[in-house]
Amino acid sequence: MPYLLVSTLVRLEIGPTIVGDEQSDPDLMTKIGAVLGQQKGCPFKEYTVSDPPRIVLNKLEKLGYSVINTSGIGQTIVWTLHKPISE
Image 1 (cartoon, rainbow, N blue to C red):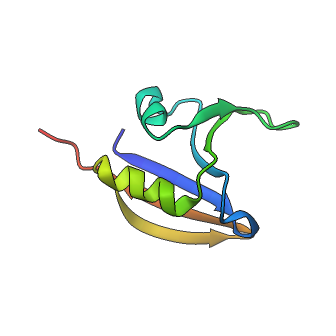
Image 2 (cartoon, rainbow, N blue to C red):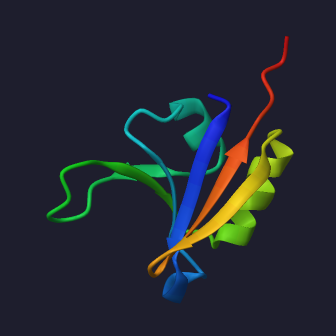
């Protein structure tokens, strides 16, 4: 899976960090310490890490991902990461 979205609420920049949904690569989620859960009233599950975004981004860089875009959406900040597909 070459693309990944990482997000957190601006007021919670120390964590938790959202790193994927139910269809994310479970092996990658295990490597970064993510846990699949579901927030009350939310119809979907998501992977979260208790680490702040900076730590998560550092872990992902070591796994070959790099940030290609950052955006703020309301009270949420989102990083888009990409990992080149090795041939």
